[in-house]
Image (cartoon, rainbow over all chains, first blue to last red; front, side, top):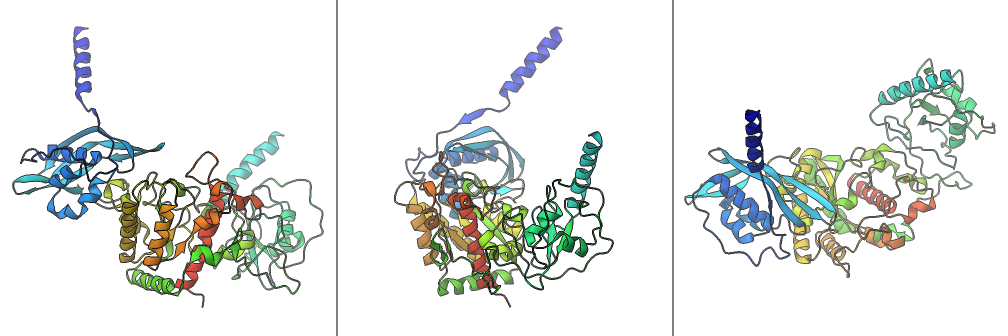
Length: 143
Length: 403
């Protein structure tokens, strides 16, 4: 009986820790302005870089998007930053990213956004990362 | 009673099987043949086949030979004879009947409606004859020639809402030729847009039927030509889609699209169209310059892909007063020498500008698609779809003129 209770408690604790809902500020009507102070990307964990990128993209944080974007995707920087422009309450739900290969990060979870009463969901997928000048950069989607 | 019920169930099952065995180009409400099948649906007006013309009719639920004969101005006797039908009551839902060109019937309508049966005659297969489409279902002139098709919708001249001056036509041909060299399908078009053109409201009915084009029956060939594209929503139609999302891979359907593939690129890859109907702007609020640049990007991408963009204006003013987004669309069509489908001008003739009474963005419904009814010309989606057909017809005649 005690073992069952203990197992149940452990399971509940693990379940509570697995995944979380992160609410982000709504996309700005002017996503190319009013950006928060930039942070250095650092060499760090590619998975964390991707999570930071996705968070910036959802928030419409153009400066951070450009900072974390690889040079091959520089031309898409503005497009990336305006991905959720015009939607309301874009949220990241259950994001959990893990590095699966030298240049890949797989993310679980999704982004949800509203337009009026219309809800859209955008599942997170696998992303490519590259090192440029000793720092990890987000470089688009991959298989 | 139980026998009747059992026979009904059996008949319905076999009718469904027979319908499923039909040629893929035949669907409920359509008469089909190998070449250019006209679409004939139940109509209050008789549709008299012209001399030398043979029509194929697909039996619908609730029809009997008398009603079918009356529909075409022929007789039950003529139909049974042409199809070697021994018992006029023994017809089956989904059965194809040859309708020969014979005078209208004076036979009284039977009081009973036949239950779909298991029996299918004729004993031999009559030869199928290539048809020419029926031009109009309205009263014919006394000399037997059909009246000219309407040159307007709700009083708005077609030449006003389908803008294709010579320079546009020349540019269309150029883009189309590029597309053909790339292997684009001349009989496929794609759609780009938001919830205002989601299925089933935008054009889908022209693939599935039933519908009645009435005075616009001359549009049947364009329905046949682009069959399969009308009901395809595609990868570039999505609720909440903005003009700046069309080329953004984040908005692509991850189940069908490749990594880093935008909705439009994905749609072009999967559908391989030669034309694309662009209906954007309802969600593009408060950012006119971004809207203009984004639509231009969509246009450029389409042209470089060998796909002719068709710019469509919208009925709503969701972005605010001043009709800003429609004016931008008109400007872009002119600047890029592209065909303009100015639906907004026709929407002007509709109650509430064609919008649903409780909605300032989405159009009023008329799913019946029966253009013999006055109601059809008061509903946003109905008129929207009709004008889209007209645009496609005009474009098709420029790009693939009849021999």
